[in-house]
Image (cartoon, rainbow, N blue to C red; front, top):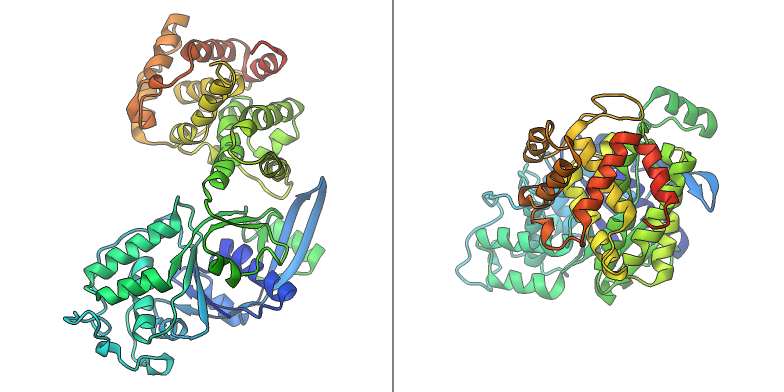
Length: 505
């Protein structure tokens, strides 16, 4: 079985290639991966020098115990540069045994780019069934002269699929791993648009529909990648005897959801290899689970933690007060709103809890706080509304506190608890930053002023994409304003303790 992979980055090597290695070892799959380096800055040269082999160190917490597991990944057969070895990539795409294409070209990779078709490959076809332009095309028929590749990833994929169509080879199943919603459907739509602008024949589009499948996927694993400091590299050398520029570090947790056919599932016996993979008819509930329980907990707690003087996620799990806060936020407020059976969402929540306590991850709160306004709208506002529907219209207390802390952070950017100001470098859309700068003098001048500020903030469609006042729980603005008053008068930690202790909240 042959696999074509676009991307040489740490994530694919610690996620997909590790999974393929497991399938080879446990299921006798004997799959081989051909890797395409799309950018000049990739690790293709190092992979070539190492014959595709590299060490993977998995470190974290499993069932309450710290684990470290070192293994070697050896399923990569060869690595080519799209920039300088495009003809070799074409040869790989014309392998009759090629069945799967994987990619992680970053979120920006699945995007349309207007570009001319490569002149030596594509010509307009008057007859939609005429394949004479590449009659006899096969792996041996690819020329040796350098041929430039299309610039975009969808363009590269469209050209390679066109070659397979011309050679009368079977279609392939495409598994994009980029972190965008409906990634498979989006990639196919762009490939079709590029192919249409290149005036490819209708028979090719029929072949795409009939023989190629573009699966929507959801991927989840934290991959710190290459050790960042010499001290960390030295500690790994001493403990594990490994000193390689290709070393990749990852957390134990992994999850892959694939929205695909039974044929796609049969291609890759991932579940049979004991991997945390689900082939499902709809990945949206799993996406919702991740966004709410993992990302929503991050975003819902980040301003509160920063105002309390903390700097990393791990500090929260080692702090008794924040352990209680995180646990109640995740399990009492967020978990009930996830649209999955209890065993699936509870198991994921337990795993997220262990991931937060991973001593090998140094996840800085300032990084999590990037673009918090839009993130809070997507990740936490729906949870707050669902909570209100389940609880007689009452807003979720910890998420209400979360929004109050976020507004204090954006307006004042200082901590009552530590006296530090500015607290962090706020990074967000300039429209959002300008809005809060304009309120700096008047937002908290009095309780009435604070209520007015909160109401105008919630009503601002430029901040949230839509006015939140149209759907907010009754009395929500007043609750947020009250929490703001507590934070500014008593500090963040005392406010958290008060909310946790007040059963009426």
